[in-house]
Length: 406
Ligand code: TRP
Ligand code: SF4
View 1 (cartoon, rainbow, N blue to C red):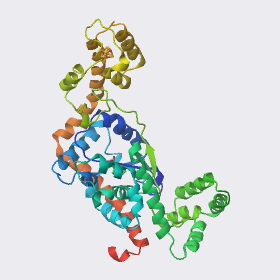
View 2 (cartoon, rainbow, N blue to C red; view 1 turned 180 degrees about the vertical axis):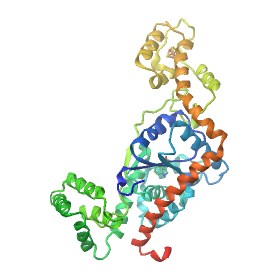
View 3 (spheres, helix red, strand yellow; view 1 turned 60 degrees about the vertical axis):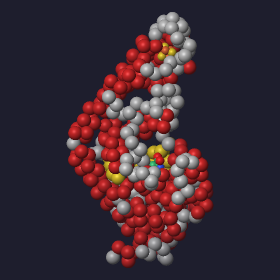
View 4 (cartoon, protein in one colour; view 1 turned 135 degrees about the horizontal axis):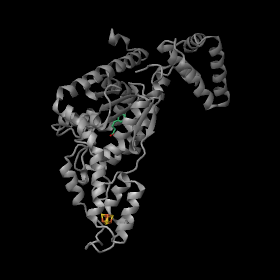
């Protein structure tokens, strides 16, 4: 993990909700697997977030945590190039959450759309709790404690990332202007070397006078790329470039996952609550069975009745799993009654099984060896903690809480 380029760090978390299904794979995991080749990635199990809504019955959480980690590994998340960990094993998240809660205006958390939404949608549960209200602040801590630059999330989570940005800005504004900030920043500019120092000054001026975002970005990458700066000087220069205080907590960007909604067995969105899922590591026999019993266009009562793929959930899945030629074959054959539904389902079942095959294979060694999974997580937690501690130490220091770690 590099400290020099926080914007290249990707962080995301998932609540442990039980075994993952193909909707999670197409919606999130496939993307994680891609990102791990390009960025320094941290992925974690947000077990404390599970508690914010499921505090009454916590029995399932432990099992869900381990099953979910196996699902990640099965999907191809590579523990040697990513850092995998469990939120509650990095207690630094909780301290940052507490500190950030002190500077979070009540109106910010109250206006987060998920709050009122969820409270009124989940009438069976009492979500009007202090913990649930603080959900986005906890999420902000998860992100800021690693100084993550990019946060892959679905559209529903974008307001949380937005609040994280506001909190970071507020924190930097409140605590990034130590006495003598300008002098210290000017000293730090000199450390860039003569050529880069004058380039930095020029870019800074352009941004301050003309608001050129491009100049700001250039100045900031000049600072990030400069190898011989201390962490403090780097943060000072990043902040000085945009006329704010030191940037202690950089603002992350949401990396919007394309939300091609994954259809379930009944044509609705695939979701555990609709009972229409195929799990990631489902047995081939039950996969085949589930496809076989899928309902089709009700117009096709007899084999000779023509149908309409637009009214059939099977075709929705073909859109995800089949190439254009197969889809044409389906459309044509369905409308002309040239093929039967059993024929139509066969290549679909095959494609799903083929997609799952490597996942099932990868999962075996982890299913058979829980210690292996535990040691992957132990190592990830250790790595994550080192990063989290470094941020927290700086946070304590600028807040005047140094005595806390002496
Ligand atoms: N709130 C996210 C969800 O429900 C999970 C999450 C918790 C998360 N902390 C995070 C996602 C930090 C991204 C970054 O999906
Ligand atoms: Fe659906 Fe295929 Fe049957 Fe047409 S042929 S109704 S698309 S399963």
